[in-house]
Length: 456
Image (spheres, rainbow, N blue to C red):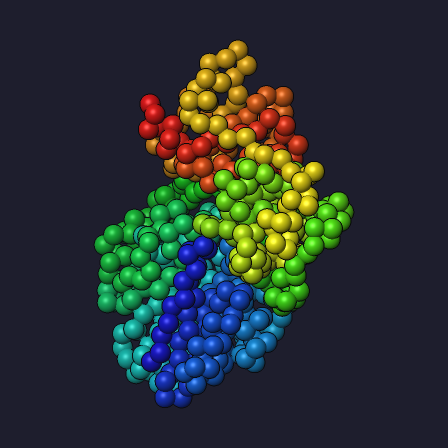
């Protein structure tokens, strides 16, 4: 048996290539949209990808089932409750998919979404105990999939929570302790609240350590699983819908077009949004007015999806050599309206100097001084609820970054604003978003709450 996990740190997302090495027949599970790596690995090993299976309609990324089916001719599989605009094979509970001796068996595990499935993996078709189980978003390492996402529109969180209780407590926890657990996400994903950095585990380990796997009533399970869930990025609903649709394939060549300063200026004047993927330091030194700063390092795609509209035409300013990465990572969340990137940005920004502006950044001492004046700024904390619970700036307003685009009306436009996160990355994103929407006096705190706390 060939078994490979592919992990994207920026989205905390795992996908899998499984094959029978004797027959060469293979399946890919939960692929991301840029599918070259799966295709190359399959070709290198002489495998034929016959099937692409999504464990559910993903909300946090745009899956690559259409791209992979187009490249390989594979059929696309979902749980039997799934409805799509493109042809699929509905997979029933207990159905077995043979690749030769290597076999997959479908287990319906609804709860995160109604159509969710897990896949039992048998190294040999006659094995009594599975080698492992690919749990999608039903069971994570240290957590379970949240039942309240927009991917589940039409079914309440309570209904889904009760389904999830049955899936986890009765089905997955009925598997033998030694069965390996391979989830679709790890720490950092917004699909749960307590995910581990580990990328695989066992049923036995989860039975012993995962809070949601301990025996409990349906009511207790629903209460603790739904409590304390963070706000999700705004693009989740867009991706959940798009994963059902027969949408265009990712065209890498079209999106990666370099633009001259004049072309960039013209498209910007026509309403395109400038996404500046440089570091907060470079952005603060000088950026195009109204640009939104989402640094390419870190959780770029998720943060871009939180502050940008999927309907907007996007113009990219990126560190030299990272333009393709920016475009690909936007495509992974279904943001395809990228018109191109600014060619040789350091030189081009000089040509656009009349449109450049610095970004205000305050030190802790400067903020303390400002707070002691007769017209103090409003401090806005864009960290998560869990982070804020560990300490906060007195009198600050809490609006997590993922909530910020939906709560602009809660922010006074006639008062200086200082935004902070933990270290200064997310606050640069948030401050640029407010400037983009017309807030005039906006700064962010250098070093974030970490610097503030260290100085107290």
